[in-house]
Length: 244
Image 1: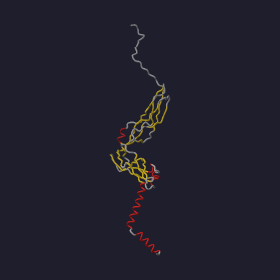
Image 2: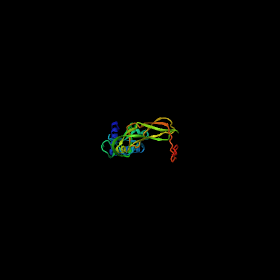
Image 3: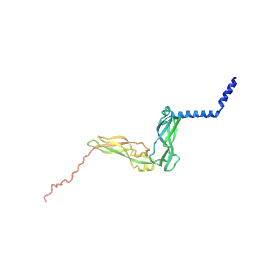
Image 4: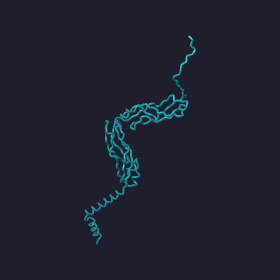
C-alpha cells in the first residue's frame, strides 16, 4: 500500500460517521468542564457598600453598610482576593427628590480579582432600599459634659469651649432634631489650678456628619472656694436701748 493510499484511508476514517464523533467530542468537553466546576471552591467576604448619590440628597435612615460577596473559583485564587479587590456599589444618582428608592447592588473586580479566571462573583443582598432626604446643614452649640469635683478647697469658677459651635450636615429630619452637641466626659477630680484639655464632640446620630473638626478645647478656671453657711431661726437680741 502506497503512502497516498494510507493517507486516504486515514482521512476516510477520520471523517466517516462524523456526527457521532462530534457528539462524543462535545460530551467529553462538557464532562471535563463539569469535573472542573466540581473541583472549584467557594468562600465569602464582607465588602462595604458604596453609594452613588445626587449632591442634594443623603440617606435619612440606616441601611446595610456591608454586603456579602460569594466567590467561587480555584482555592489558591479565591483566597488571594481581599475585600479591596471587589467593589460593591448602588447607583441612586438619577433621583432628585425625597423619597424611598431601590437599586441593584453591582460589583466590580479590582486588583487581583481582575485577572483571575474562572471566577464567579455573587452579591447578597441583590437589592438595597434607601430613604433619601434633602441635605441640609446647621450650626449648633457645644455643651461640655463635666464629671467629678476639684480638689478640696477649690471650685470650677468658669469655663469656655473653643469653638463654642460646630457646623453639621445630614438629612433634613435628623438635623432638625439636633439642638446641641455634647463633648466626651471631662474629669474635674483633683484639679487645683486652671487647665485646658482637647476632647471629642460626640456624634448624637449616625446620620449626622461634621463639616468642622470634631475636636474642641475646654478651658477651665479653678479658684479657691468660698464657703457659705446659713443658719435659720436664730434669735435676735437688742442691746443698748435707753431704759425709756
